[in-house]
Image 1 (tube, rainbow, N blue to C red):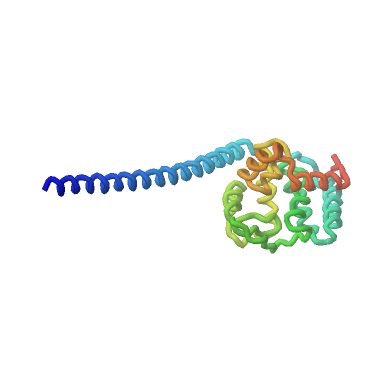
Image 2 (cartoon, helix red, strand yellow):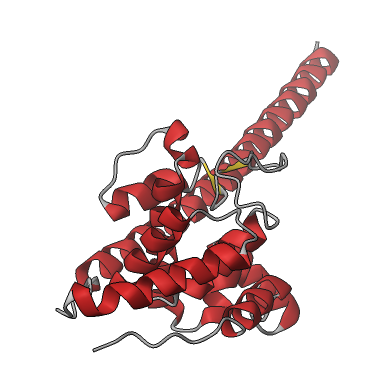
Length: 234
């Protein structure tokens, strides 16, 4: 009887130990999941803070210049972009891009060269990018569906997936997003690399390389500077 009692005690201890280990393992797994969730929430919170700061400081330029004097120069710039695209970039798109870029004090050639790189020089507004672990990128500015909605919200625009194939809509998102990123970093290397790789991707790139001068950023800036300078009339 005593022997049986000892065996029973051992069994209880073993089973109890296994139960404790099971609880401990489950607790560790839950803790790991909570840490990952908390990290995601922190990243989202940081993004929302940056977006709020951007919206508070956003000022659309209005120089008050008479359109009669500025329009010929704008048309000349637009025609230059059409020519540089070998006719793939429509004149109406170019006029829109230049006017909207000027509102945000962004070099329109930066935006143009970004669209050129993103579409491989085709400027195809219906382009669907290759599949990645995050999905596809869409349209002339190659936005992904996990990024475009909050940029559209920041731009004060409605969002539908099919709108990404509208070149004017896509260009508007691109200009607003570039302006948002430039407000954060105040330099084009980080701004363009973040546009291409995402904000977290920029951090990883800088950690691995010690700088933000990605080939993407350098190519766009170099090609933008190669465009002829056309002064706007006063």
